[in-house]
Image (cartoon, rainbow, N blue to C red; front, side, top):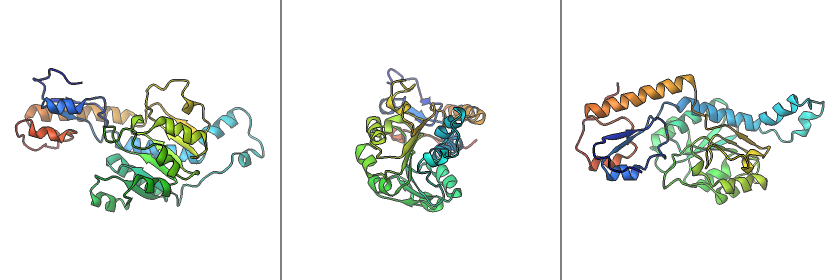
Length: 277
């Protein structure tokens, strides 16, 4: 929560998400909230594709079987259905910069891409050859893989839940690398336990670090990672650079490049446009 920050011009967050900051309170106080959007785009998009492939190929299951010495002539047959990637439908909940980077990669693998995003400019979808659907349920029912790409805010908290999962195919997989709070986690657990979904690949959770007794950690059809989708040697240094550049823009008296509470413009004096560099 922002309190007594009359002297502050901006809060510049090192990260793509900004849910740790009370941006409504900041706006009330005339404080810009800025993130470092873009510095993890490529890494998160790569992580999404990795989770899709790992789910489809049941990577963690086969890995443990081989390590345990349980590789036998009939092992592959006992794994059950092994869904393809080529020709499958990927549904993106959100078509921002990371969603578009994911769509680009998915098309390389021969996937058809749908997206639900009531705020996306139509030319972004057209350029990426992404079909925009108008309801979450349509996206859920048509997709073989669903990937979350929304920030966490008042509008997107628990955006997908029981109704969404019931609309998904029982052969479909759910991927989340955005924020755990965008999903009703209890509903996700129930859907997985009841075989309403084939599985999930999760990098984010409602509570982080994840409690050891959470059911998601004991399900064979769930692949997890520790909120590491954006991590790489390059992304860390790039994030710090962008954070410094945004601070410099604010101090020079211009607008930052990535203002996440644009309504604050009505609260503070007019500034020149941001300069890239």
